Amino acid sequence: MSDVRLYYEEVFETMKQEEETISDMIKRLIAEHQPIVTAQMIGEKYYDDQPDILLRKPPEDAEGRTDDKKPHNLLVANFHPNQVDQKVGYLLAEPINFKAEDAILDKIGERFDDSFDDLIIDVLTAASNKGIEWMHVYYDADGNLKFKQIPAEQVVPVYDEYGQLTMLIRHYVLNQVSRAEIWTAEHVYYYMLSDGEYVADYFWGEAIKTHYNGDSWGRIPFVPFRNNSKEKGDLWKYKSLIDAFNNRLSDIQNTFDESTDLIFALKGYNGQDLGEFVRNLRHYKAINLYKDGEIDTITVKIPIEETERYLKMLREMIIDFGRGVDFQSDKFGNSPSGVALKILYSGLDIKAKQLERKTRVAIKELLWFVFDDAGIQADPKDVEMTFQYNRLKNDMEDAQIVVMSKGIISDDTLIGNHPFVDDPQGERERLDEQEIAFNKQLPDITIGGEEDEK
Image (tube, rainbow, N blue to C red; front, side, top):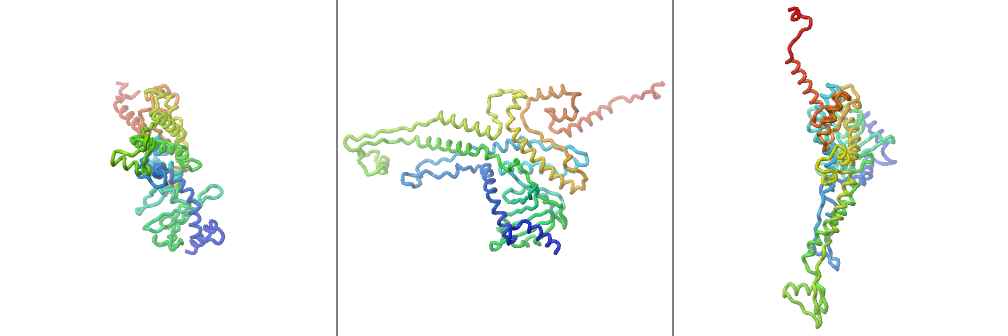
């Protein structure tokens, strides 16, 4: 344990400030990271239908008191979840297609199964909301390699000047106790908050452990899935527009509700205050007026057409700035050509390819752990990945292009781009089986053999 303790001290001395304890370091790093978490969680809140419009205070009367009789509608237009789900579904509606040697493909298929396909959608959705999400690699009780999504708000990464992850703090609440884990390339250290200080957490049996079964990977088993290079969520491209849309939508509904009430214009009213006027009108259906007094009514005019144009403009701006696809658009007709569809999807392509590039890097990191677990002596960088984008297509045009390209490009490329093929690898296998079955049906003709002599 002395060697472990020495390593423990060497690692943390590089992270601590002068005369700072380990507990102080943990609290400082978590506090410094909190502003990032606050910004991340706004995207998550909007995805969960909790936009800022729901924080609007109820209307007040002339004296500053809450007026319960005035309408207080809070309407939410659900743009952000639609934009995020559209992007992630566009990128991952079909499983990622890997290309490598058969033995390597088998191992990849074992680890990146249906549950992983489901997990990666959740991770990229969270990354789109927060800017980044983490995946933890670990061994379960049966010794199987597993992947677990770790919320970004629980993770405090520490990088060196070259951008390499040198330490990671994960903090969370378990059994109503705040806990923290410090991960390095070789060890994990467990702490719990007691009397305002982080102390060794013996909930795990011992405070200091290796990554698994007395061994370590030599790298921190946490992989970041970034939304883009700046680790920013999608919401910030159009948050102010969503807020403006929700505000105007709620305002117009409040105006609708108030328009059922008449506004009274009084002249020569014989009363103490307007409250007395309202009570007398409701109770007696009559009011007192001075000589030559008058009462008139005013109806509220609702700006329907202006509001409709304004909301339509905001909606188009949200989709444009969010680089989404507006399926309500009538610009391309009922059967758009391939070129028109490319234009329709151009913004979403740009956004999805940003996410794809970052996802490729993350999955290659996961493959390192898969190869290490399986004892595969290969570089994950050599594994090819294809993301099968879920865009609308003009199938007739695409099929014609495939036929016209026969003999010009490889059959693998033609199969991968045929509109009827969802699983290129499976389609190749079916073609091979079809060819074998066809050859078995051919007569056995021996050239220059006994049959020729007869």
